[in-house]
Amino acid sequence: MINNDSVFNKIAEALLIDYTSVYYVNAETNEYKWYSINSDFHSLKIEQDGENFFENMARDAEQVVFEEDKHIFKSDIQKEQLLKDMKDGSMKSIEYRLMIDGRPVWHRLRVIKEATEHNTYFILGVLNVDDEIRKRNKAEKLEKEREIYNQIATSLAQHYDTLYYIDTETNHYFEFSSTDVYKSLNIPTEGEDFFKESRKNVPRAVAPEDVDRVLELHSKKTMLKNLEQQKVFTSTYKLTINGHDMHCRNSQIWASDKKHIIVCIENINAEFIAEQAFMESQKNSITYNAIAETLASHYDIIYYVDIEGGNYSTFATNNTFGNLEIQGEGCDFFADIHKDSEQNVFAEDKERVLTALSKDYLLSALDNSKQFSMDYRMFIVDQLQYTRLSAMFSSDHSHFILGIENVTEEIRKEEEHIRALRTANEMARRDELTGAKNKNAYRELEINIQKNIDVDKYCISFAIVVCDLNNLKHINDTLGHKAGDEYIQSSCQLIFDTFSHSPVFRIGGDEFAAVLTDRDYSDRDALFENLRKEVIANKDAGDKPVIATGISVYDPDNDIKVSDVFERADNMMYQNKKSLKGIE
Image (cartoon, rainbow, N blue to C red; front, side, top):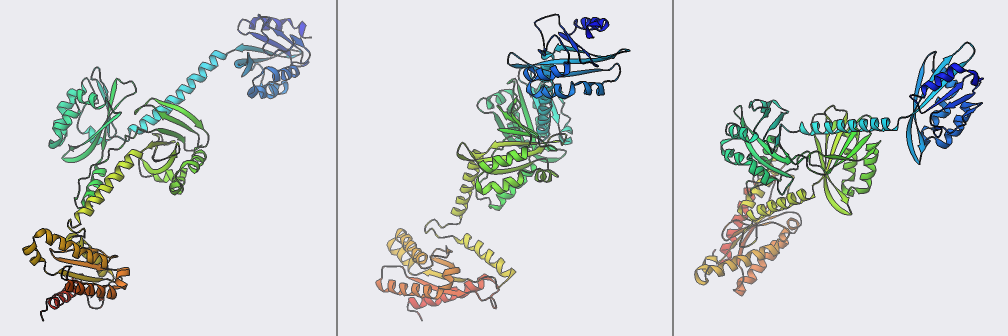
């Protein structure tokens, strides 16, 4: 019987030095005895001794063991499994949670199997390890979060050419360069006084025309002032490195401790070239001011997504750099983000967004690029907002890092600027007096039509009407230029009214042209005849516009240039002018 096993009773008593409770079980008969220094402590609540330990333990585990751990007592801590798992002299340690005062408390059960000549025994020691395991789990969680933060910070930092981390109290700084270009400047990677080093290095690295401005930009007083009212201050200037000019963006932001400033230097040569090309295409009609871009780290939400498994964490930023806070986690990012996009993305953008938010698409987009960005519209608190998604790899290429930022204000400003460009271009091609298009606009249209003729002379049909005002000089000389201007305006309005579906151009002081296409081209004979009849009526009335007119239709078999059509119409106009003046 178990009560006669004095040796093992002594072993159990000795174990109580380390354990709060010990169970001594005969593996042949299943009889058991419970030992505890504290008679009130009885971890599994089973009787102090009994005939079937394993049956009683499985029964009572249903009442006191945490739900998720009950399976341990039904399978792992059953005699057959223990005999199978444990060899001679072996030991087994199992951790589980008991429900105590309504909360799960971690315990460790250590099982020792011993055999004598006649019997096999189990000795089970129970120890409360709640503090130990909770500290261990917290440390593991912190280590995991620290690894994620480091991945995000390293990934985002690599999108800049150089970063400076500056102590605003001591001026001490660290420099990190991700490209060899900046290393060639031989600027120290660590120093005692960033601002002193800047005063020394700016004149030899910055283009002469930008030196004074950049020296001011790199003074401590200016930096602190620029960051008083805004989270990010951005400026652009030009460097001269190894004899080559390089346009760069300088972004200054507070670190999360509000004691350090991070200065981010980014090569924007590609942006500058694209901007110059855009300005050239606009024929320098208006100065184009670049819209300041948000720094790569300036996101509202960041997703950290395991590429292989799809597990992800969601982070929110409460300032511009660092200090990320986990907002949630999930096990299938692409399924969750597709569900969210189906509900919140603007209908016209939905197909494009759903296509882009797939693992294969992102892998392809990032194959030869450091970053993939996409703008789209979505509803946020029932308001349509412009959103930018930026995707990049983590530094070890095992995760996607996706940043989401609200760019509604940026898009709105950009649209306003484009509208201003269009308005300026339109005004540059308008005659101020009449509202008709001017001679420059006519030349542009002539060039475009000519290009079509050169490609396929049968691809286009058009006619040109040339008009010349009679009596303008006489009106100016006798009634003054104000009356002359009014005469020009009323004459132009007559041409507008007649060819209402065609562009009308003022190509000289008293000369106009209309290029007829589509409906006006089809009705050209009737429209032209009506114009001439109205001119005759005006001539008879004596106080309305009298206009000499000529028309010519493009003949693809004989006309080589647009000017051929114009000259025929012009000749016809002069014949009509003589007729109106009674000159044969």
